[in-house]
Image 1 (tube, rainbow, N blue to C red):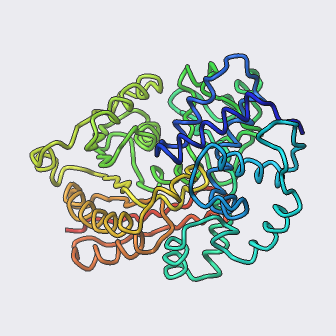
Image 2: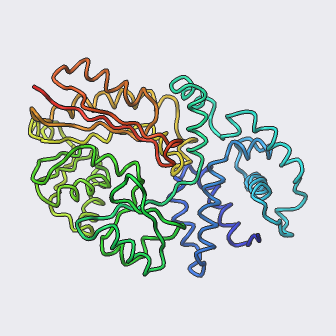
Length: 402
């Protein structure tokens, strides 16, 4: 396998932006891929995957290279040397790749496989927290799974097409997909590709949405004609899924505290052919009061640590702080308490997170039910990255009895 100078220099510049300027990896990758219009699919794949790999294995590569966490240009190149050796690349005769200690790199890698925080490349505090909540054996399996590269999963927009038809149309555009057992609207890409350039995407035939995330809207048990409130809608991936499940009938109110995210949702609804969604910015308590006790269904896709989605957001490992997790647990409790008031008697709500920590999930629900005896739990479900290969999620279906 050969390394190409312009691609590697793009990766080095991207890593400096992520770790020195605090930019988000996905945004940096998007910018990096626009650097040269002449790049083919293989070049783009190398750039994107190498950036994510170097972010994912930051602590491991730093320890092997002896660079700690100081990201000078020289140190980024030392980290790249570690990446290249461990991936089996033949090193070209460049100034930045002279005198690479190949044997020492491989020996140090083998030595560090005995220490989980280096082997899995995670901060000490996160390892300690997860062991405390999940147990050492369970956490070891989960973090190994969360360090795997995320697969690209599509959700068929059933308002415009069906899964079999979409699969054929994507194949006609050169993109091979397979069905996934247990996920009625999902297609998995056989090889990574830029699906956003396809006519199928432009025509609103699918959304990119992880398999686990596709379970949440269905868990809410919606029917056509219902009034549904999506309380933390964001850019609306689950909102669009709810609209499809409701066959564009009824009323979905998508709310969020960020107007910019709801603007993105409006663009997505037009592409998807969704007509039953209205958006509301939660900029005052009046908005909530007007909706109190009116909803047949409420979705609370709560803000969380995001530990369940580390495979697609590997830089979260380094951006997360213990204080954030402590604070988000308090925020989740407040959101569940406040937004549950939107459910009418006989109505249902789903509380969901993309975390695998009990403190953000079943413990939150238990505490809520203790303080709100008018609600009962119908069922809950935990998605394990280790068992499924997909993102870690939690969802609980609650009913308002009185």
